[in-house]
Image (tube, rainbow, N blue to C red):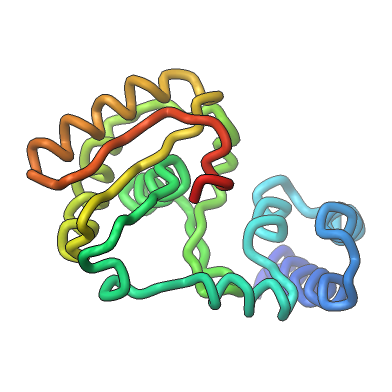
Length: 178
């Protein structure tokens, strides 16, 4: 195992220790990342993928399988899911996190741009949604990200082409709405 991997493994263990004892996430991530002098990508790994036992339990409690959305309304955080799918398609790093979710480490943070991978990622996402058979799907995109309205329009066209009932919107407070 490389020196960096040993450092990251130790950092993950130490961050988990602090989080399990109630230390504030941002402070604990910064403290551990600084202590181990981790590069930016590994800092993102700590921030996005390491959770306390309480957080893991809460995330898993909110998780539902595909069968649970059949004939029900489904809301999707468009950027979150689309960026992760694009990352997989273009072979960028994704990680299975403590809570079982797969997350990308690209750190887009409001700088998203439609790429050549976007149409394929969108098609794959909508195929997965179609197989789950929700009664209606709504993909929400953070309006503070440039061109969110255009991306929502592209999604609406794809929904129509695939004959899926639903909508896509650029809106504020995506996390709160979902």
